[in-house]
Amino acid sequence: MVDLNGAFSMSQLAKLAQSNNPRKRGKLYLALGSLCSLKPMDDSPNDMAFGEIMYLLNQDASEEVRQQASNLLCEVKWAPRKLILEFANDTTPVANPVLLKSPVLTEDDLVSIIQNNGLFHRLAIADRPSIGENITDALASFSEPEVLVTLTSNLTASMSMETFASCVRISRRHDDLRYNLSDRNDLPRSLIPSLFAYSSESERESLAIKFNVDVDNFSEIVRQAVMEKSPKPDQIKIESTEVESSGELSIARLVTKLAKAEQLNPASVINAVAAEKTVLFEYAISQLAGVPVDQFRQAIQRHPTVALALASHAAGIDRSIYPTLHRNLNEQKYFEETLSGENATKAAKAFGGHSAAAAAVALRLMGRNT
Image (cartoon, rainbow, N blue to C red):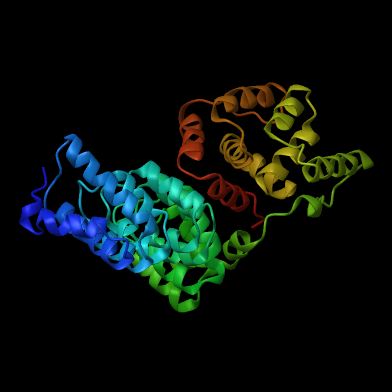
C-alpha cells in the first residue's frame, strides 16, 4: 500500500479533499499522482479507491493539471489503467506523454486510439518506440504524409510490406518520406525500383550505394512502369492493337460498368474461368489488379504460373483458390505450365513475398514491352 506519510500527511490531503477550490483540488490530484509514481499500489480496497479518486479528480481538473499528472505517470508501470486511458484520449498536450511512453497501454489500446482520434494522436504513436506491425498498419491506413514521415523516421518501428508499399507510393510527392525510406535497412528490396523511380538523381545514387544495386538496372522503362498510375474503373481501355471483334470491346465495357458499380470482385474472375470465358477473365483480373490487360497478357505469355499468382494476389483472390484457378486455365489450354517444383515455389513467393500493391508493380514490370 502507498505510504501517504512518505510525502504528504493525511491531514493535509484531507483538507485539500474537502475544498471546493479548483486550485486546491488540483493540488490534491497532483499530490496523489506524485504518491502513485513512488511505488506500486497493492490490490487492497484502499489502494483501488486511491486510483478511483484520481480518476474522479481528473474529470474536473484543468488541462494544465491533467498534463502535469500525465507527465508524472507516463512511465509508471503500475499507474491506474483507467486513468491512463483517459489521458490517452484527452487533448494532445495531455495525451502525448502517455502515448509516447506509457507501458500500461496495450497494442489493442493503441490501435483503438489511432482509429478514434485525430492526426496529433497518431503522430505521437508513430514516434513511440518499438511499435509492432498491427500498430504501424493502423497508422498507415490513414495515408497521412505527416504521420508516415514520423513513422518512417522511427527506426524501432516494425513495418509490414503493405505499410512500406503505401509509404513508397505516397513518397512520390514527399521528399522527407523518401529520405526516411532510403535510410531504413528493413526496406523490402522489391520496393526499391519504385522508390528509385520517384527519387532525384542524387537520391538514386545514395540508394544504389546503400542497397548495393546497379543504377543501370533501373532503366527508364522501369521508372515509367512503376510511376504509371493504375487505371481507374472509368478509364480502363483496350490497349491491344489486335482487337478483332466488337465482342472484346463489349466485354471491356461490361467490366468497366461492373467496376464502377462496385460489383466486380474476385468471384467474378473465378466464375469467368469456370465458364471458360477467357477474355472476360482477362479483363476482370486485370481491372481488379490495376494492370492494363495487354501487360497482363504479356506477363502470362512469359511466365504463366508466376504472373497468374501475382495477378491473383493483386486482385484480392485468396491464395487457397489459386491452385484451382491455375489447374482450370491449364486444362483449358490457356497456358501450358504445371504448378509443381520451381514453379510452385515461385508462385508461393509471389503470394508471401509481396503486398498486393507490390504484386501489381511486379506484374506490370513483367508485362512491360522491352
